Image 1 (spheres, rainbow, N blue to C red):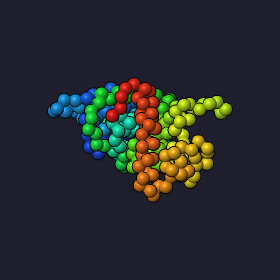
Image 2: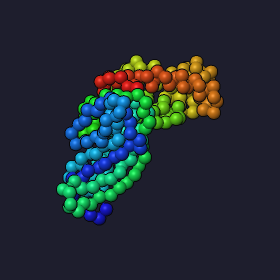
Image 3: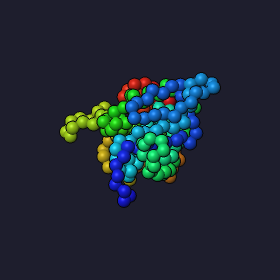
Image 4: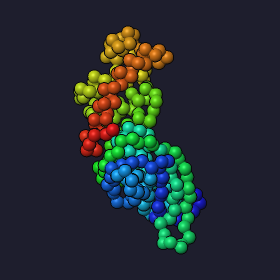
Length: 244
């Protein structure tokens, strides 16, 4: 935009439908729009992100990035894709003053199990101070959202690969060594590495996977299970509690 004026902003995000939680513990600079539920607990309807002094385009990017991390956390916590949209972003000025701003919509939840949601456990993620956990939440969220088992393998494995990375020349973590063949077999037409070829022949009866073969896809889904479980347990340890 041509107007390069800097201001503080309020970015309001709304969920497509309220979601039920037992409680919510917030963090500074984020205000959660909640109401008491007749059945106990609360309904989360949305949230407002307080954006520091920035030009409007940078403010939008700042708010969207922080909102993405909130959605990633909720998705990981509940095991469902959470849907919502940016309702508005306007200058944080006293009532009555002219405010600039704009609305931009992006759909991104149906949740059945309620939690005590503690956003303080990902405060460093929200402030972009824990890049690694932010990456891991995003990969796990993308794996949850995808219906494609190949994408799930890649995204969930990256959570573990990021967690167990070692310096070049050092032996791989036991989990990575045991399951990297699964990621490799969906990334390459044939098993290029000996361990990939050996495991593929053991599971699929050949050194490749045929993604058009329902039997191969069933076997791949079985091979995915320990990878998804490991990724989930990594995040549970890091955010301090069980998820869905």
